[in-house]
Length: 61
Image (cartoon, rainbow, N blue to C red; front, side):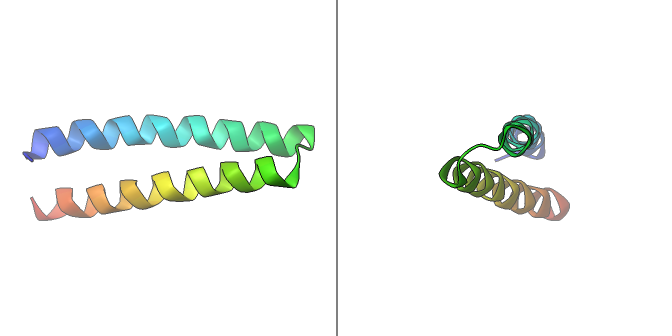
């Protein structure tokens, strides 16, 4: 994967992270169920992990 492609994928993941953060904030603000909170937290953690891996690959590339 070229550095440009990595940057594009990273930008896409950053958008997904922002959306997941908004969903988690909504769950917390509305007092959603613990299951919904847990799912939103897991999604956010998974996206952040992917984003960190891509950022590390960009530094190397």
